[in-house]
Length: 122
Image (cartoon, rainbow, N blue to C red; front, side, top):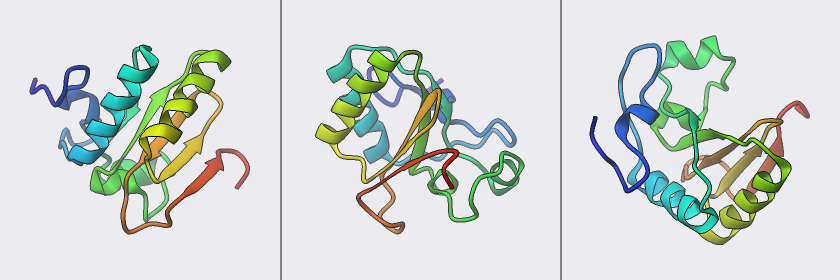
C-alpha cells in the first residue's frame, strides 16, 4: 500500500474490477486540502475506473474516472456536505457532482470546466 499523501493511499483509488491504479497527483493534492480544511475523514467510494468497470456502473464514456482525474467520496450528513462544499469551492476542483450520499470531484482539463451537477437530475 503506497501512501499518496497524509490521508490517502493508492488502494483507495484502485479500480475494483481490474485492480489498476491511476490517479492524478493534482486530484490527490486537492482531496488532501479538502480533508485538512474540513477535518472530516473522507471515504473514497470510486477512484480510477477501467472501461469495463465504468460501463458496469453506468459511468459516462467520457468520465474523468477513466483517466484517474476524478474521485467520489461518501458524505454522511448535511452538515458534512456543507463543509465539504465550502472546502471544494476554496480549493478548486473544476468539476463537482453532488449525489444523495456522495460528492464527485474532478480535475479534468479536457472536460467542461466550472460545472456543478446533481445526480438524478440528468
